[in-house]
Image 1 (cartoon, helix red, strand yellow):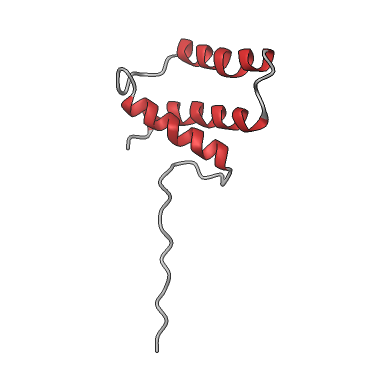
Image 2 (cartoon, rainbow, N blue to C red):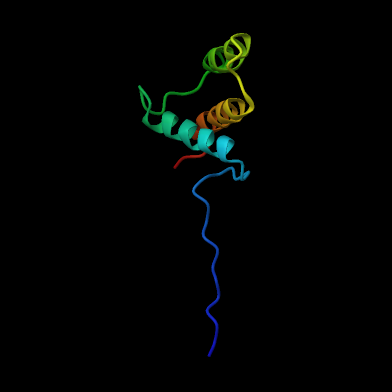
Amino acid sequence: MRELMHTPTKPHTLVVLGEQHFDHGYLCGRAGYFNGDPPEKPVTWEDMVDFITGNFLELDREGLLDEERLRDNAGFLVGWMSGMSFPR
């Protein structure tokens, strides 16, 4: 009897690091870009600076930026920006 060949499935993300927090943030960032208010609003430098300030620097100052949150927020930022260059 012939064995069936296993065909690997394509990932549902453009970036696959296998790190659950980064991957989760990445998918949330892409979803936020495509479904945000307003949807598909171009991400500006000011948006990125605001995101980094609020989600990295301020959380770190408050002692709330652990490694899991750092990876999740970094993934979100990359996913959010990737929405502009890589459509669904």
